[in-house]
Image (cartoon, rainbow, N blue to C red; front, top):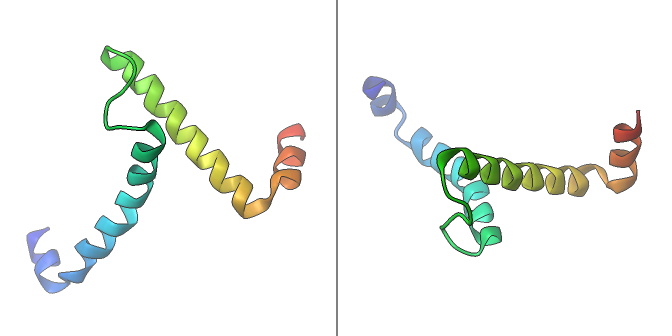
Length: 74
């Protein structure tokens, strides 16, 4: 893996930017870097709900709410 990164050093910079944007958005939505729940199971559920909301918002922005509602009804 290190040899591949040495051949293309910019690839990690691009990957880091691509991955960190959604997490930065989720942290901003949460209001802080802390979860409201305790225990690993509950924190996992909370994170899943944040990710679901993020993905739904993206779909609504890309497709529009009418098309999304039609797809959900089908």
